[in-house]
Amino acid sequence: MTLDSARVDAEIYLPPGTNGTGRVILGAIADVAATAGVSARVTDRYRGTQQWLVMWGVGADDRSAIRDRHIAAGGTVVLWDIGFFNRTKFDGHCKASINHDYATKWLDRTEPCDTRWSALGIELRDDADPKGHIVLAGIGPKQHAYIGKPIANWEAQKLAELRRRFPGRRIVYRPKPKREYVKLQCETDAKSEIHDLLRGASLVVCHHSNVAVDAVLAGVPFESDDGVSTWLRGKPYTREVRADFCRRIARWQYKRGEMVEAWHFLRGVVNGTTNVL
Image (cartoon, rainbow, N blue to C red; front, top):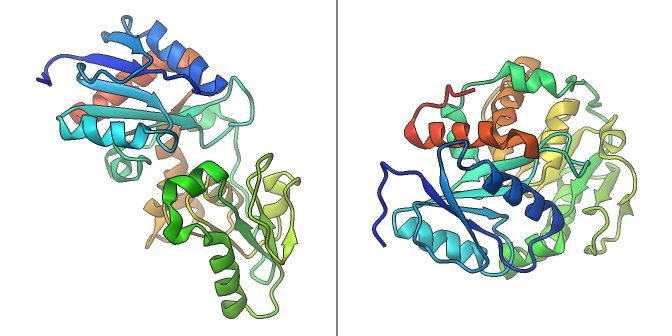
């Protein structure tokens, strides 16, 4: 495969088994590609003949291997998934990343966008209580399979660690809602809304979950092993820094009616011009 960086053409990979939201988002991306100056073709099996590869998720089937194969050939891969904010509605936001599972490495180059953040209508809160409970966020079955056997019992390991670090502290295990989950010998809450569960918490512990972003919104300290929230490591956990983080990641999520803007933004990132609004 010869990939020409001067051209913008894309393979939109839509294999059987892609979930409903993924199909809607990838369909919207394909529909407006020409308007955004992109020549796109939708495929149900990977062909690898286009400069860009666009797919929904990377933690299912052979998609991670396909991503690696495309990058090794010199291509660019855009990965879409459920968004950081306002993600509970079918027509809600979905997030993108380039080449990596998360957009973390791109955030330093991402200009904070107050317009996109303000349009979400979200207010930062200060719900933490230093003496409050700890929220342990679980991992879904697909992600367990993706991260592999070495940390397949991640939740149990974290629970034991937290009990050693915080003897006597109340710990609430929050499994991923509406999915099968690892059972732990501790208080479990799989039904409460996450913002209610975070109220009065002293700490959130997660692997890579969007729950870390929910913690940022709530002003609750968090510990995450992976994910876009790791960009905050070593930074002061102030309202100003939290807001800056939110303004940056707001540029990485789009609704299905905003895909022309998404194409322009992603092309700007790859070309080193992220000031494309």
